[in-house]
Image (cartoon, rainbow, N blue to C red; front, side):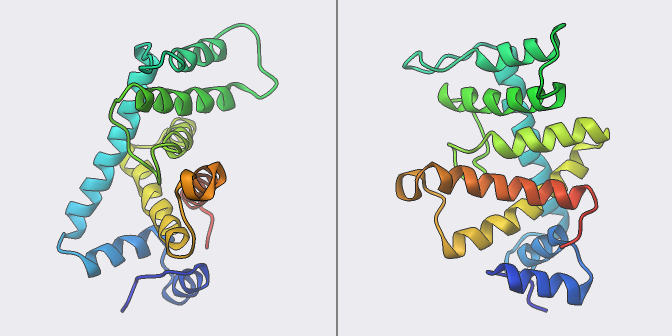
Length: 194
């Protein structure tokens, strides 16, 4: 069976006819089209997720200034505010997610290691969403990493018919794509169906 899908309609049709999740379809497509085993691919995606978490942790632990000095320290400020006495109208969960995204942005700006999902400019969105989901659901890294398979599948569809590049498509190309990928991941992780 061919598990590669380059359109949303093809992905939905395959998910319905096979009774598989988007994450499982993406994983099977990689096994089918590559030279790595299922176990190796699952391990690799879990490693990507751990790297995402590491870039969040680094951004929250150390004030990382960009070489221009324009970026750095905001993630820590937002996180400190989320732990303070004043309750934000947006809520603690949103503030933490925002701090996580900023932490990755600041890690990237200081030439730290990130996982571009799908680009370096939008690399904070998926980790912020997935880590926030993981904490809220008290889930394992492996469970959260499953969301990356769903995100990758959506990214593949976007990449086949549009662009991710901020230089080519503007900020919405980067941020919109990353948001769609993260939203699909969270939806599926929370039991949503295609």
